[in-house]
Image (tube, rainbow, N blue to C red):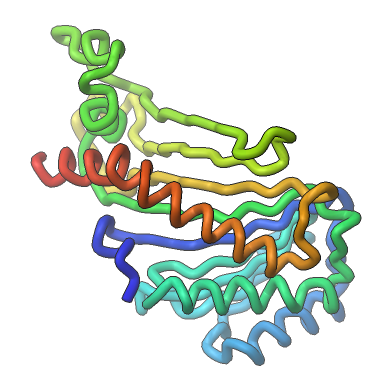
Length: 247
């Protein structure tokens, strides 16, 4: 069972491989790659060409839990939205990472970095930035400024990036994305949209110790779990969920 799903409205695990060179976008290569993915995951039937160099294959979104994979000019992406378990997300992401070198001629030499991330979405109909500031700025030096009389918070999207090794080859990034506009604050007409919390572990390639993308993915997922459980959930996810539920 996916324990993270109970903490938010939507939870996802995604992987992004960033290339130094352009990815192949020829019709035959692209179709063979996505057909191989579809063979591994037969429910991935929704194929879309979004532009001349961006392609997407995914499952039906209506179920609320679905796999997806995309290919664009310099990036291979995959993910699982609301996976039944983290093992299911791992099986999906790792399989695509295993297929990519054979079908896309994707090698370590051309790879710049690989991201593995968790994201937590919280649906909220109100001032996103105000509720994030209330949840995360309370008790900090910014609390007084955010609570000035007659003032309204218009932008509060904290971001923190850190190196996890001496060479800065392994990094992590926490970011909060809000979707409220100044017009909505001015008129009081808010739509129900998600506040997103992203936590990413990035491995730069070249001097990393892993022989395959799947090996690196396994290590990055392990680090994600450790940091999310130790720091992100108690200090970001739980306070934000509690503040939203109190509204």
